[in-house]
Image (cartoon, rainbow, N blue to C red; front, side, top):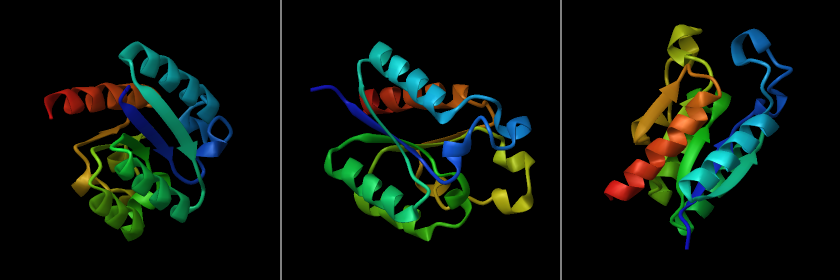
Length: 147
């Protein structure tokens, strides 16, 4: 059975390509999904790709990933800075997780500098745009191989 990787995307990421292209670029979430699925094929893993504007959906998907022993690549978007619920779900599900952000959150507004996810993540990738997703997938595969 192939390793499964959940790629979870938080609020407003469905607006990529339209929302603040100067920060986030012109690439759409569908483009990112296609890139991740292609990279997943190259790496020999199954990709589950999801996006929601609702915190509870993300919590449920993290729990599902834990039950399925899946790895998680998450771009929690704005919930990065606000969601204790995501923090608690990650901790409870005991998932191996990498956090990814398209922009460098540390070079932006000060409220974006704190993450409720980072302390539970194996690593954080930010500021590399769409390439950060591919970096995150590769990092998760290496982490899984070393466990």
